[in-house]
Length: 100
Image (cartoon, rainbow, N blue to C red; front, side):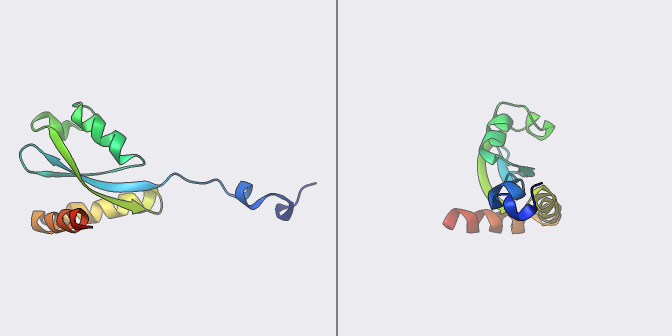
């Protein structure tokens, strides 16, 4: 019988994928907020016209902000907070991210 202490530390807990909250600038200048475990792949999906109806009227042109979150739940919480911000505050996030 194996005890927990006999199992290698890296096998004890599954490693979860990192999750991100991200902002994409649309061609009309608006900002779209979403979450993904692969923001670059998700942005490519948005650029192809799939993944969000938001981009049907104005195509995705740039991934302008990403923020690493602990897990999917944290990413969803952060997404809700960002979506509540005024556009000027979202633009500040973008500026801070681009200057790093």
